[in-house]
Length: 213
Image (cartoon, rainbow, N blue to C red; front, top):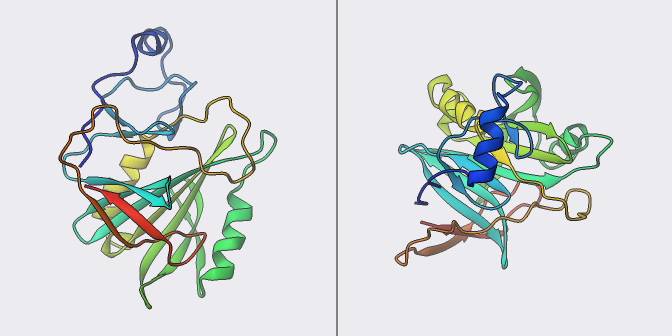
């Protein structure tokens, strides 16, 4: 499990103290005022610290492409993608997900329209909710699967987690839907283990992911 990021950088913290958040909750863009709390710094994502959650990086090959957050038998998967400056990606991504998964229904959730149905994994399936959040030049896809997809108490904890995520898009040119780079935390311990097993990538079934314990 990742160690939490002690605090934001001094200059960033100073800027945030001067300007209060203009929204009640996130996900936050790194360049907008947001609460200065302890977070796990993964480069493109800064995650709130919750001692009840096990946070692991998900990788395809040598590239870290997302995060898996585990709470009992339920998981939250997060993937941040680069998006055009002029428009969001959620409508387009919803179409791609529905082409791969059958019997998905649209419903209104805490971040707007979401998809509710089943996630295919290891020849079977499990309940899943797909939530999409369009930000400034980024898109955050969240997938809640397992019991938490329909257990409001578990799902509520995941939603609160998502609401305090900070997305760090950066200024580098990136292709449409290119994963925003992630990395291991700066304060990584030496005893971490890597466990490779079939992962759950909403865009491609069956990639191999590495889970950093």
